[in-house]
Image (cartoon, rainbow, N blue to C red):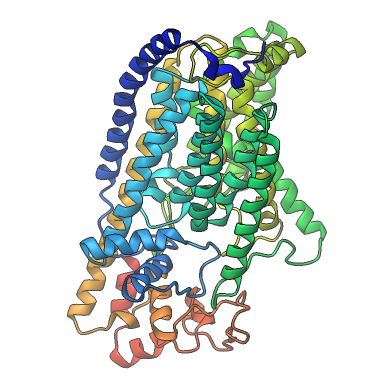
Length: 585
């Protein structure tokens, strides 16, 4: 039968004390494993060695906001932000006051938040019913991911917003296993209030208060007064979020995100079909260290079916080789939403001239695709074999084996509505993609941690340990993540070294193009904001430049800047060769 959580506070004193003693021992021992995961994460970040005085992504704009806040105490946007950034600005300003301004200081602030996420995610897995080595494995699958580590080693908002979502989930888990109604309400209402505040880092994190916490109230809806309190909490959260959003949209030089950015055409529908096809594959691809456990289900196929699959592969392989020779399948192989991870490695948009070597050539991405499809096929076979009506009914009425452990049904109620709404909110960006506004792979991080959580919980249903193949896949993913991110910072340190040589030669760095993050920072310093055609406030802020500097070099910020001095200054100083050398390095 379904556990009646409203009667948990009626347990007699001696029985309750015995239960608390037996529950505290495993929790205490698992804390060391949580700290172990944090230590592994710390070792990975140290191996990356993210020490360079250059921005590595959009954080050049966020760093400017943190510095301005540290000096003035005001939020000043600069024409690049679609995210509110919010408390992360104050968090970064605190580190600036403590250690001085540098990109390393601001990266350290996010590295610490990544450590908190690592610790908390392991605790969330334990309360989901994923225990022992499986919990450690799941935690490392997410935090050593080639999407998570590069973001944790930057001043981007992805990891802080992921932490906010996880805090809401953890609060709901604690509420569902609270020993009194008062404690349950404190966890739920407190989680909603905290999420209203911490969701200011990135608006999508507000789904914690708007979806995850209401899902927690739904599970406890049979308790007296919980329905009414849940509705009131949701309305107050919605009103608070609406007021914060109105404040944000009225700030100068912010970039609004519109749901419909143009007419609904065939091309828009095509873009939507693409994300419906590739988004689940992208999420499962980065969850492959767990998903590969189901590849062994293929052994259950009959001989006839195996022969058919082998024949199909034999026919398709030559066609794929021909298509690969003419570069016709690259966009149809993982990673499908190349931004952080692409065929060139991690964050490949560093200013390098000439042909870039393929860090992930077609041979590797093809193998990943084959393993992914085989594992997914095995998972479907297992699901078809086990997921009957009786199977679902049994898990709806499942009684957890441990006092603080959630059933599969309760876990699904907390994370599946969130995942569905989160994916829906990605559709407007997918429908109208552009250079600066698209569905990037790092946006799938919340869905990836949900996928890892659910896959590990389902693997427990098989009563199986993590197979060796999963650990091997995790090792490969982690090696790529650490090595490629390490190489990224080596490249940026080389660029920083050349920029230092230019400065020592008497060339002002504001006149040097490259990398693009520095170009953006130069424009903010020269003009006060980035001249983007999406700017609406203040009216007339965007000014079209008919003769953009360095246009022949595909200079990103040249067409947007009215006061650029890059090309003319370089020509007047005779520094073109030095500039090209800086870009080439």
